[in-house]
Image (cartoon, rainbow, N blue to C red):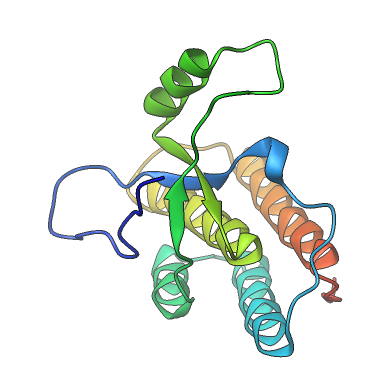
Length: 161
């Protein structure tokens, strides 16, 4: 596997690719060290607070992403998809949706970072004039908050509702 850079060059016009832990490698539970548990708990708490605010802002999430430790990842070699899809099918979908399946020593940080980036992208679209139905925005925001709670549960973290 070829190592990928920990940080992407923000000066390029190339869209940022979302790193995702391969679905068949997603953990059911994670045993985190105290420091990592505290970092993830604080990040998910701050994310949920921002999403619960009357007008969540992408700038707040951008700052949260900048402070969150970037996990070291390597491109996942797709040889067996554990599905009816071929590896070429998966790679084609990945290119289309601008995602990359990765392996990492820190799946918790990778999963949290992907949620932060997805929330940031959604809020940025909303702020730049994309017309979203307010009910759909509320449903999507609730979905993001529930996703954060699921990650917390997997990591053995209790988040307030």
